Image 1 (cartoon, rainbow, N blue to C red):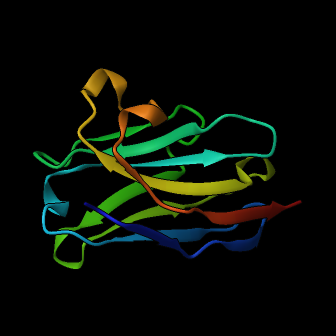
Image 2 (cartoon, rainbow, N blue to C red):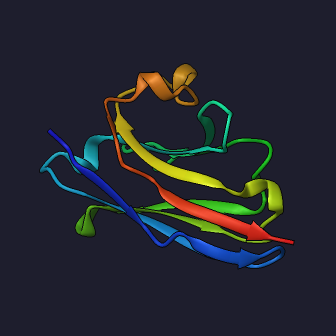
Length: 125
């Protein structure tokens, strides 16, 4: 069993930066694929980024590529999402997820096994 707790959300101006974190419990944290998703009001969960345990391969949605960076610290059982050059359309609740999704499905919310409660990010114009 893994419990995930996000933090670091807040209000930021467009063009600014923010880092959200996700702390996990559980001894097998280092083995999981870790992902970040976001959900804006009235929309489905949208894939943002993921990082693979075995080789630290990273995958990003086209909408955030070059602006966001995912990283993990297995010693701290924490995964991070550094968000730069934020846009108003990045506003959403950001969730972290953990599991063993096949590579082809790492962008799909339902293929993860554990999800956090989310942290809200608001980007003002």
